[in-house]
Image: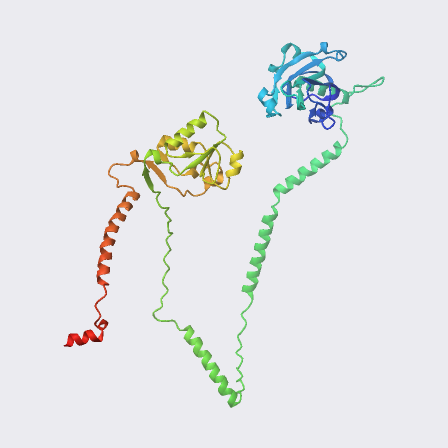
Length: 460
């Protein structure tokens, strides 16, 4: 639907100098000047009498907004205004007092308007805003958009076409143009079209430039090969080799030794080893890296979440109480506020105060972690239910812990119990070993510990 042009602001009850009523002509905010007034209004004059088929309203701290219309000459008295859009609610009383959702937008189609009033054309539109629940804030409109039917736009375009092509010039009537008459520049266009058509026909017959280049290069190559084959072979003339002048004897001996060493090195390097044979290299097999299988342990249901100290953010009762009950049954501990002892934060959405406090310090998970662990009787790794996508993409560092009732029959006990038994057995073994070591290390009687008197008595 086409938009209706708001010509000007006809009147208003009050305006803030920073947000005047003329801002609405530019789709900007309008606010009242003072506070404490229950209702404020602003009146617009349309560009022409128009049928209204839709209205879009953007709120600015107003609780109720209504729209009225009037014709030219009746805009002075408020009694002549008729209500085209019934007063609609944009905020609840609670939202008015806490100033939440102050910029709500509502779009009203033709079905939402008063049917009898919407059929006629109007010149003035009056918007009335009210705020009875908060007397300490300014209010008004963020924007207003009015729509008209497409038929009026078509009528305007047809009128403009008739104005552009007048049939009379003063007392003289203009002759209608026949299809055979040529406009300005038509002769040149015809000549250009005929030239383009001739060029198109010639280009269709002629060879493309790329093909012509290939043919030319192929002809040059064939000519070059034929000229080289036609040339007679030149007779080979053997030139007699002139013997080199021998250097002096001293230099000859030195050079001879150096050359012999170099020749020996080259010969040794060139000689292939008889045992060396070129063996084809075997293709290397791709080593498959298998991820280690996840370990599964078993615990009683009342200890599935043992060691978990959690707090909750963004979840209200009764759902909050339900989560606390299920987590407590699985062995977790609840704290109302986050501290250094907490490990998990059960959060409904991002950017809550607790979320900003815990981010980077603890594990932030969704409420589905508690619900699924309780329903499946399994403690799943927290990264599967992390609130941040970055935590979910990282590898899991925890193993699944199942309820003891889900242990398959015939499976051995958990590692904790077996290790405990091993420790008891090892204690008994170590006691025996200690006794044997102490007996072996008992100090032997030294013959040199006796005094000389004792030796004399023994000899006598």
